[in-house]
Length: 79
Image (cartoon, rainbow, N blue to C red; front, side):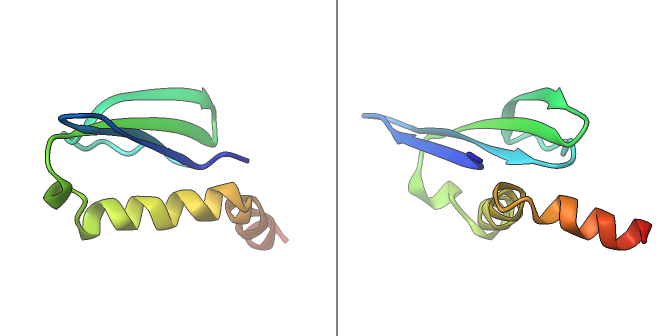
């Protein structure tokens, strides 16, 4: 499953992360709900410095979604 995308443009960095939850943050340019556990969070940065620890935490969370770990964790909580 795709969990993130990043594209380098001449003057900006654009991309998105797929999270299992809808996360409100002013750094997101758009949040689309695909299903109850799939929310696409788009961003656009004008400087590499904006790719900070907060963004890295989004990427780590999105990677877990890509591995479907959020579904495994949910099943463990139900059992």
